[in-house]
Amino acid sequence: MKFFLLLFLTQIAVAADLSSVDQKIRAGDFKAAKMALAGGTDFETLWRLSRIEVFEADKLSDPAAKEAGYTRALELAKKTIAAAPKESHGYLRLATAAGKIA
Image: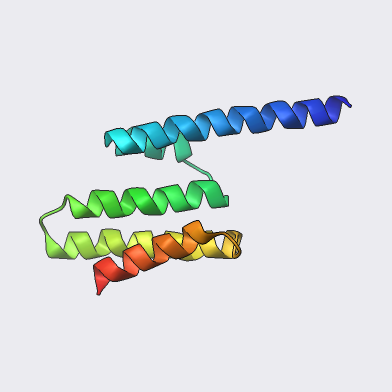
């Protein structure tokens, strides 16, 4: 019983953290969002990092730097798909990044 309670509380904490990250992304505070996601390799982290890379690259004026950012986003999207192939977020992030590169 204690295990399930701990698992439940952990899931609540993770959901709250991701909500906070989503708020940072919407506000354009990409540095803080990246710091909150640092070290994560799970599906939820990867698709958000891919999204941030696209947003950051969109703001750059140097074409080579833009493409490098979109390429990072594309690689993160591929990792997202590998982590959760049945979830749509990874495919959306892949299409977004690939479209920016094309």
